[in-house]
Length: 244
Ligand code: IPE
Ligand code: IPE
Ligand code: MG
Image (cartoon, rainbow, N blue to C red; front, side, top):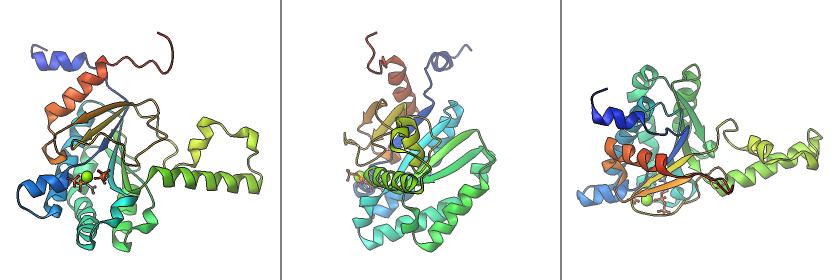
C-alpha cells in the first residue's frame, strides 16, 4: 500500500447506493459537430466503464437514469436511436456484464418500450439474477411522479382486495409498491452535465441522499471524477435531521 492513491481510497467512506443522472450526451456530440445519437453511444460506453469502477470500489448498488418519461417527447429519430442502442448495448456487453458479476434491474414504464427493446431488457434482467457483485438498476421510460402515482394505485388495489388496511401504511411498506421494492435508500446522487436539478428522478428515494453536481458532460466523466465525488461524499456530515 505504498501508493498514495490507494492509501486515500482506503480512507474513503463508500456509499452503499449511488445514483447517476447520465446527462450531457447531446451537447457532447454537438461540440464535435456530430448527431446527438453519437453522444448517446459515447454515453453508453461510459456507463460500461463506470459500472466497472463502481464494482471495484465495492459499491453494491448503482442506479442510473437512462431515459425519462419526458424523453419520449424528443424527435423520432433520437428516440429510435436510443431504443436501438439499448438492444446493441446488451448484445455487445452480455459477456462482460456476466464476467463483472452485474445483476440488472430495470425500473420505469417498460410496457412503453418497443417490443424488441422490451424483450432484450427482460432477457438481460432474467439472465443476470444469479450475479451479485454489483446491482445495476437502469431507469428506462422512468418518471418518479409516475412511479408514486402507480404506487398509490397499487396501494388502492391492496385496500380494495382487503390485503391491507389504511392504518397499516408506513414509509417502508409504501415503497414496496415501487418498481424496485428491494433497493436500499440512496446515499449519493451524481449529476454530470452542469444542470442542478433532479428532472423527475427518484424523488422519494432521494430524501436524504447527498447531491453532487459536476459540470463535465457524461461521456467525459472520468475515474478521477468518480473518486472526487466519493471523496466529497466521505467528508459530508449526514445528520438525517438529528442534532449531532
Ligand atoms: C442524457 O443526455 C441522455 C438522455 C436524456 C437520453 P442528453 O440527451 O439529455 O444530453 P444533453 O443534456 O442534451 O446534452
Ligand atoms: C434527465 O436528463 C434524463 C436522463 C439523463 C435520462 P434530461 O436532459 O432529460 O433533463 P432536463 O431536460 O435537462 O431536465
Ligand atoms: Mg440533458
